[in-house]
Amino acid sequence: MKILILPDREAAVAACVDLIAQTLTATPDAVLGLATGGTMEPVYAGLLARARAGEVTLNRMTSFNLDEYVGLPPGHPQSYHTYMRERLFGPLGLDPARTHLPRGDASDPIAEAVRYDTAIVAAGGIDLQLLGIGGNGHIGFNEPSSSLASPTRVKTLTRATRAANARFFGPDETVPQFAITMGIATILRSRHAVLLATGGPKAAAVAAMAEGPLSARCPASALQMHPKATIVLDAEAAADLE
Ligand code: F6R
Image (cartoon, rainbow, N blue to C red):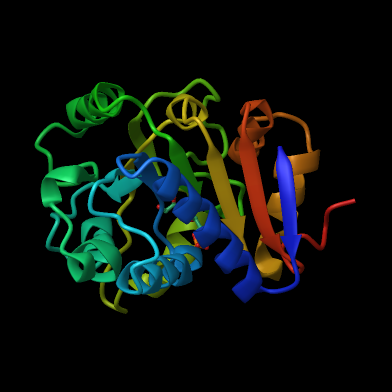
């Protein structure tokens, strides 16, 4: 696990965008694993700016997002389909056939999860997997107690995660209870995992991930077993490291 500590959020985001851009420059048809959430918003803004400046091209890459809420169709404003379409795929006019997310509205979400893992393998596996981390140590929606050998599957969201994500939903909307998430085994098969964490509220989870025991209580600690994991932090997120 390589840990990069940058002075502030802006520098950490830029370092993360650099890593993605380097992968795409070396391998324009790379397979990227993508994340959503607040931490990733400036990453996609940065990638978009670089693509518009002609410094990187995303037109040939294939992507697989980590997760999607069960029950939300792709057009739902809070779906991760919408998140990605608005921030990256739409502005770049990417071919929807190359940008994959689990279908939250699948009639059989369990079968959809199996199909998704199979599609990742068929695409040749993930070259670079982008990750955020939950305050409870989750990666994707692999909540505490997730098997470290888990495949892509339906996972129940914890109260803490639903409360944290309520900020993206309207006051009269409820955060879905279930998500389809890439499993930890799926994430560990990526050839390079890049986790970005910024801000003080992530400091305890970051320390548990990097310095705590390998444990299902902190699913991100599974990255200790990844042959090539790069953890990009700002000073606040790194504050609890020894
Ligand atoms: C979302 C995802 C989650 C988030 C995590 C952090 O696709 O995979 O693991 O990365 O919940 O979310 P933010 O960045 O909103 O704190």
